[in-house]
Every structure is written in C-alpha cells, then in structure tokens.
Length: 361
Image (cartoon, rainbow, N blue to C red; front, side, top):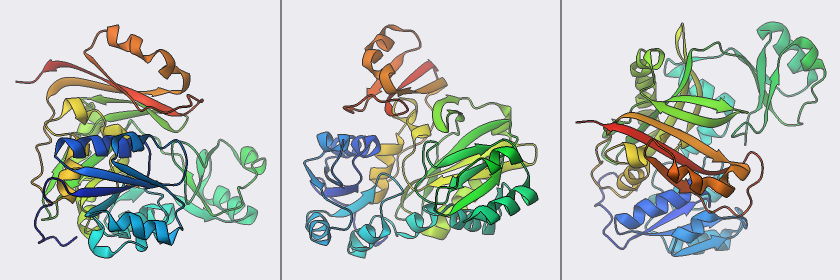
C-alpha cells in the first residue's frame, strides 16, 4: 500500500494469510476498529476462521483461489512468517500491507543473520551445514555445545537439535535439508524487542519482557524484565529500528535477543505479532494486535505504555488447556485466552494467561 494513501474506512476488508491464533487475535482487534477480516490457509484447524467473515481453505499454490481471495480484500497481511513467497507474490503489490522482503529475509536463518549483521548486530558464531562434512567442519571450528537448526520452517523448537558434544554430533542424522549450526550462547536473560511501524514511518516500542523457554517454545514472559535486559534493550532497539526501516516494514515486527556479558546477541526475527507480546492485550495502552491493524490500515498508532507494575504471561500447552478455567479462580488478576483449538496434543499452544498487578498511576 502507498504510504500516502488515505486510511482504510470502517467496513473495509483485511485479508490474513494463516489460520492460527495470531490471525484469530488480529481479526478480533480488527472487528473492534470496524473492519472485516477474511482468512486464507490450507485445510486444517484454522481457529482464526471463527473471527473472520469468510475463510479460504485452499493450498498455497492455488492461483485461482489466491486471486479470488485478493479480490475481496482492501489490504492483506500475514500472521506467520512461513507463508510461501509464491503465494504472497501472487497478490497485487498494492494490496500488501508491507513488502515481501521481510518474509524473504526471515524465512532463511542465514539470510536473516547476514541482514542484521550488516546493521551492526552481534550473532552467535555459526556455519552453514548441508552434509556430514560441513557438519564435522562446523563442529571443529565452532565447538560444542551448540544447536543445529534447519535454515527454513523451524519454529517453537521444531527443526532444532541440541548438540552437547562432538560425540552427539556423530550420532545425529542430518535432516536432509540445509541447516545452520550455532554456538550455544551463554546468556543472563532472553528478551524480545517488539515494535510497530506505521505507514508514515512512525515507530513505537513496547517494553521488553524477559522470556523463558522450555523445549524451544516460549513458556513465560515477565515485566519488569530485570537489570540484565534493561541495560541492553536500547542497543537492541536500535537494531530493530534499523531493521524495520531497511525493510520498509509496516506493522508489528519482533526481534529476539540474548542479554550477554558482551551485549545483546541477536537470535531470531519475526515479521509479525509475537507470542511474547500477548501481555500487551491487558498490559499496554494499545495491544500489539490493535496497533498492527492500525498500522496496516493507515490509522494513527496507539500508545504502547505499560499499564501495570508487574505482568506475567504464561503459555497453556497441550492437555493443560482441558481444565484451564480453574485459572480464573487463582490470584494475580488472571486474564485467560483460549484459542479454540480442537486437539490438545503435547507441545501445542492452546492458550495463554496474563496476570497483572499494581496498576501504574
């Protein structure tokens, strides 16, 4: 969309690539602002459909369906970064909320690392791995412990293998697709920098939460984040700001970092709303979801100030969702969000709960 075009009026239609919980929460925020949403994703447990006025369950390479979808939309965004570029590039450029360059960069871990390194970010020592010889050379040069990751399609700990020693490496069977091996970072804390950039180039940041992961999946985010994060988030914000501007990005953009003795070390980039920002629904003046909708529709950005002195977000995973309503009887002002997924299988995000306390003046 042109940065000079007028804001989308109420009643306009937003297209969302993807059918997961992020799309669901984007659609709910859009309804609050008077917009309609249409989703597009292959057949599956597309929980976003419940919040959309229409939903296309078609393949990513179905050109006729993509054209029909685009024909119903005034602007199109995405809820996850692994939407095939072929699908995005089939959409008329003027309908895309932001350029596909952000997806092209974030879909390849090596391209992503080159991109942020050029901006001055520090990354963990790493090497490309395509075969056993590459892996052996990477282990010899970088050492262990480390993490082997597929360069594409990994998320929530999927497509990742921890390598504790050279012996572990010899026993690991490569997945048959390009990977990157990274030195394991010694860190004091993990944190996210989440920003929103409007069509006019205005940028606002939410406070950075300290994140804890289990099995490669975010388990908990807390504010305040603590001194290790608070001493480094400004430096990390500078990298994130440069990334957003270099990409000409519009909407919510997330960069994850490790707080280390040598400063913030870049981990991953997600050109979308992010799990570690879910606390903003109750805890910030404007949530990441509402501000993403504001940005892509050309509306003024909302404030991002944190509204409470203490905030904790926890993911609800697998069968823990089956009795999640018990959380409402617990202390800490719990705000429960269940995503409506039909199968509570192990390792699957089913919802989250945010607890807030001590409202700020």
